[in-house]
Image 1: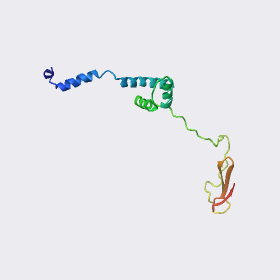
Image 2: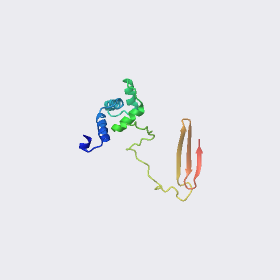
Image 3: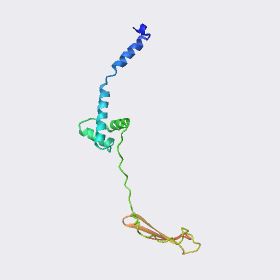
Image 4: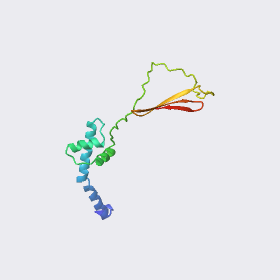
Length: 146
């Protein structure tokens, strides 16, 4: 038959071997099952959970799986969790109705003479330590109080 089809015998047997490889091995079957479970857990969370939480859910359900395996499966499927927002401190809340003071120096802080423009800065390091600086912007003289 190989001569009639003009193929080598080795090629025929490789073809037969590939044909029987369409059934999944135990490892491939487990991987497919994990993909389905990971996708279901991600969908149930509303697309929020990442690999750590999904791993915890699978382990609670009795599945023996590592977080790296879940992360790899999620990357292959193309799903990802939502990262939490970083906390940003808001120290100043500006009142939009408040009137701002007029800019009397037009952003030119060196007026060419002493005692024309002064600025302050408050530095807070800890709850009990505050440092206030007042300086003359003409010659950079600094008066500090602690």
